[in-house]
Length: 301
Picture 1: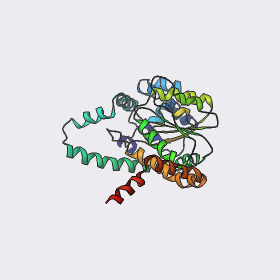
Picture 2: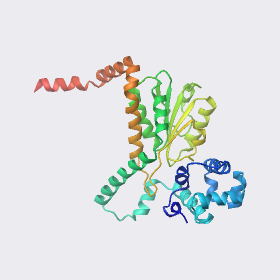
Picture 3: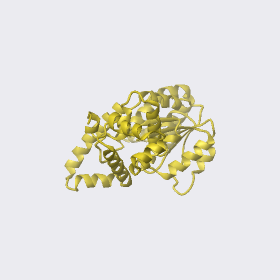
Picture 4: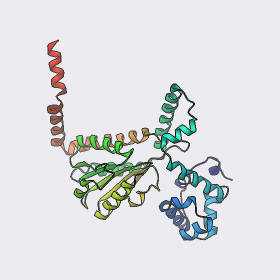
């Protein structure tokens, strides 16, 4: 057994460490990416046949390349992953903690974990893809639509609000769960759509993404796994993986990376769109009047 099998890495974390794949291994990896659920239940013969490789090639890849002790270990890992996806993050956390922690323990442990989550995301992040996305975000003449559902919606909203301040033509696709958002009618083939999708995934996100793909708009996906349901539709894919030992999938790393995106594009967008930046500042001043009110308060003292 090699070191990879000892450290408990998820299969796709192991795959990310591989430098070069043979043609048959490329077939296997591609099939794994598109058929996550099948990995938990198919036997070795069926997996090999469906991936289009020999049984010996599949066995060799799982054991000698990825480091599993045997096929049973691989399948058990996938079944546990599927079980986890069916639970909410809070349910998994409570089960792991046994409901026995006091509030100070929870606070200290979670703050420590949040730091680890950011450090792990930084280590795994594909910087080239990050820069590619920020380049697209600075294309201020190109309409940009942002979408997320369930817990991803709050992240999408945060990105949308901040980008509104620095560039025009930014819209938020609605979080409706019963129908397509009406804003989808305004998505055009030359537009860019940035989708945030993290577990637990939304069927609504998948259906809307399929419609966006039919329209022909460019799909940018920020997600937590190469095999997320929307991943096969993405033109650009940025993965923010959770730490391997996590029981609660925090938004901390996600927030930090999305904020970094905003900061990375802000100066260039404002330089390109000086009138937009000035208009936003004026509207904020006129609508909220924070400085005006502060001035009045100060003058009465």
